[in-house]
Amino acid sequence: MKQPILLQQNIRRNGSNLLSSGRSLKEFAQEIGAHPESLAALYRKLKAIERFPFITKDAPESDVIDRMMEYIDRGTSIIIEFGNYTSTFCYLLIANIITRRIHSLYIQKTENFWVRNARQMNQRNS
Figure 1 (cartoon, rainbow, N blue to C red):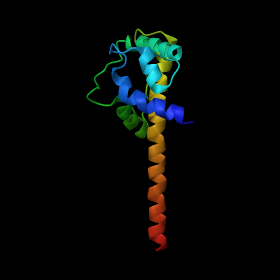
Figure 2 (cartoon, rainbow, N blue to C red; figure 1 turned 120 degrees about the vertical axis):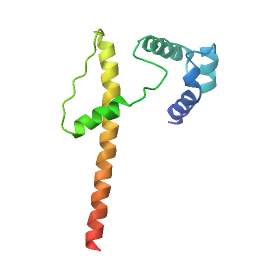
Figure 3 (cartoon, rainbow, N blue to C red; figure 1 turned 30 degrees about the horizontal axis):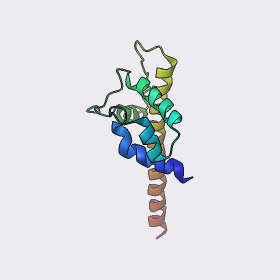
């Protein structure tokens, strides 16, 4: 069970420059204890994602997902336009990223709500 955790930590440390560095995938695989061919397949898939023009290294000035959450909080519907991208892969990639972020923010808001309500109930009972 430690293997995935070590892999995640190592990729967080080294993965940001792995795609652009001249570092050998075989060396990296040995360092993190992964199978070289599996890592090579992951590398090819990440390079394919990196080629999409909407994937950038620089963070945008404003967080689009936060803005979307503001609309959702106000009860405003959101329509996502994919423009010229008709690829199912693009759609699934973006939908997955958005869904994960919205779910994470929703969980955070729900937990904050329950903590706030518990404090109010404790104050009333005191």
